[in-house]
Every structure is written in C-alpha cells, then in structure tokens.
Length: 86
Image (cartoon, rainbow, N blue to C red; front, side, top):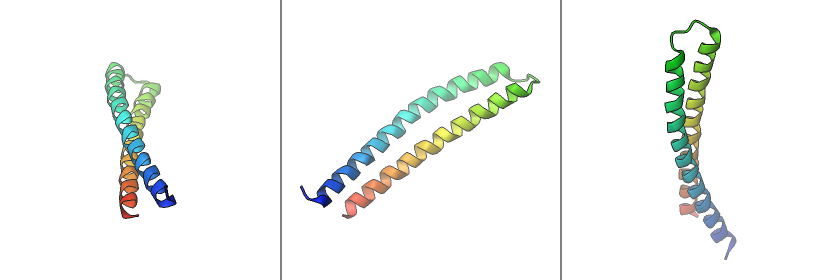
C-alpha cells in the first residue's frame, strides 16, 4: 500500500470516527438536555444566586456540546473532501 493510499484510508477512518463521535454526543446531548431542563424547572423561581449559576452552567454545557458536534461534523467533511481529492 502506498503512502497516499494509507493517508486516504486514515482520513476515511478519521471521518467515520468523527461522525460516530458526533452521533454519540448527539445522544448524550439529548439526555443531558432533558435532565437539565428538568433540574431548571425544579429550581425555577428561586431567588438564590446559586440556582441561577447552575442554570447558566447547564445552558453553557449544552451549547458546548452542540459546538463539539458541529466541529466533529466539519472535521468529518474536511477529511472526506481531502481524501477524495488525493
């Protein structure tokens, strides 16, 4: 197998791994979002700063999960595009 063929194979594997990782994160994000929403509903209306802090923290974590999923999909697309060109 030539170096180019090995590189293509590794790029395609990386693409698959990134897609699977994004899918796994998607499942986790859904469960996390449901639990987070439940927690936030339970503490809604409380006057403590700690309650607001945990709500903001959970929201930020949800956004970070989405960004990670998006980044993995972009990486997968980039790997496929590059591998297809070489």
